[in-house]
Length: 79
Image (cartoon, rainbow, N blue to C red; front, side):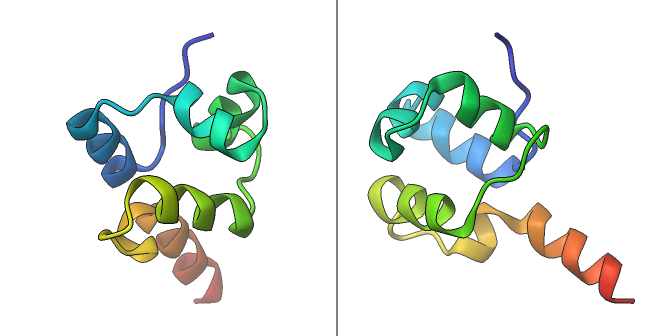
């Protein structure tokens, strides 16, 4: 299954560090395809999962930076 990650900074950081969706799915204890759907926006990623990804793989990158597209969606709906 080929997924397009909707989070551009997360995708870039994954590429820089050679981290796969499978690596992150294993850490979260979920199926690779399930996480792929969440990262592509086909289903929602929950806050706990996002924090676990950030803490384990990208501790020096802020949540807001990694998942900036979620922040953009929230600000559009708040207007």
